[in-house]
Structure formats: C-alpha cells, structure tokens
Length: 64
Image 1 (cartoon, rainbow, N blue to C red):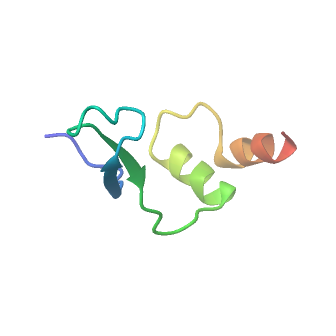
Image 2: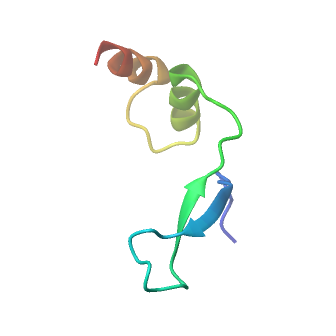
C-alpha cells in the first residue's frame, strides 16, 4: 500500500468554460496555511528524490 505524503483539500465549482455541460467542474485548492521557501525545500529534501540539499534549493529560489 502506498504511503500518503500529501493531502490537498479542494472545493469543486462549476466550470465557466463549459457552460453547456452541467456535470463539468473545476477544483480550487482550499489554502490551509502558507509555507516558506525553507519549509518547502526541507520537505523536498527529507522525502527523497531531491538531488541537492535543502539549503541549495532555498538559495537557488531566492537568487531567481
């Protein structure tokens, strides 16, 4: 059984681009909290798959 690493809470709304289809919806994420660049980089590095360190990721983003 796969491990759940992320949960995203979203709400469904009518899709304004397809008004003719009453069964078509678009999902919008419900924001629960903001994350800093450092928090995102640390999570990416600690969960594996990242080929650089959290501090290197943070530095790259902040230099952009």
